[in-house]
Image 1: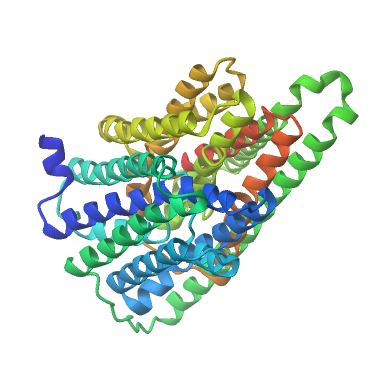
Image 2 (image 1 turned 180 degrees about the vertical axis):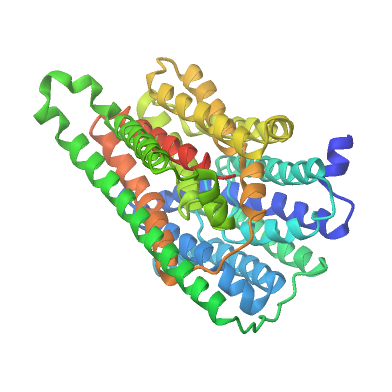
Length: 485
């Protein structure tokens, strides 16, 4: 009970923001399950459904990347209220019409059908930054509990939403066909409008005036140099990601033809690529260390001379980490159907219990982070989660796979509170257009195209390769998270 009292904070705005996290996650849990099923009941084929969900993912990425700029112009309160009003209006459109154009526009603009990782969408970073503003005077343990409660409420909402999404199967006694899904979208609209009203009642979140600071010539030159360094870092990181994607794609697609006797280890190629990258990075680091020692230079002095920039995290840490946790949870329901021929009710139950286990893990991870530290606990849980992702496709029985899936989701997604705390604790630096484009490309080319790629690999009989790719991305994300100090 003390944990619950601390998690809801002592300020009224903290309690309101926690309630919004719960209600918005319920809406998200409904949409990730029922949007594709609703389109299928309208007679849409798989390609059309995948295309709409891909466009929805692109818009969701755009909303997320530019949410900071929109918050600067509108303020946190107005931006969050506007987005929830847009989501409510989009849900009303789905509940009253079957027009394909209207459905495509509503689904895409609101980002419906995506968000299996429980991230909360474009408003979540703004809400957590707002939440952070009311926890600056609290001790580190209380702050960790508040963010852990925020993540736990999000996954509890996903669990409740997944259960509510099963209502159309019972409503088909009174409603025929696709009409049985419309009352569920009315629930989404009502909850979205309720979120907007609750945000209206919260204090703070007003638009802040931009500071007009005239820097000196030395500071101006340092800022320009820093921006150029960040731009080069963003471009180089994008090239590294693109190179890894190209090598892994070409190698896995031609592996059986190039190495017919090593067909069984083909799905492990992405994991080997990440391990080679890690070994190469360690070798480069030790080579630089040896070179400086041979010159008689002090590495610690060199690091401290660069100040905060020396400990700045990789600019792709956040998007790559978001991609990593999304890849391992986006298409598992389809994999259960294709691998074990499970029905929708059974899969829905497994997913709901997995979200419930994730909420419990969010609470446990709060205590773990207080003992090990935020970054170390985050890296440990994601490494163990990646190992479970690799083990999942080898499960011979459905219930063993269900248990592994729940463990994967709880470890990969249950650390969201610590991840949010680590990222919001860092001072925000203005991002250039190169960094924005990099984030959009990474999110779009991965989470946007992943459902299509996953489905194609399953159609080709590749039940192990998708999880190998997801685990590899997660290993890469964990290695980059280690650099945060």
